Image (tube, rainbow, N blue to C red):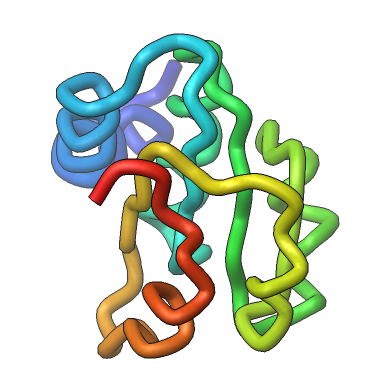
Length: 112
């Protein structure tokens, strides 16, 4: 692996890996909200750690790439109420203010 390829794993990789490994158990359902550089890494790490990865995005255009990184399910933010099961862990990797009213109103978190 070249230095250019490895560089994102130093900061972004350590950030997302720490958040996941400290809170995730194999078999958990983890939702990733925010599909940029951190989100892409979080999807891959969570999938490799044995989680069912549920992506929530505001853009349908992200679905294909998230599945290629290991996501199992994909939901648009305005359709989170259609999720068939709760998630155990929610990882927010975006820089904007997440729509907490939608996230918590729909009761997507299994453990608060």
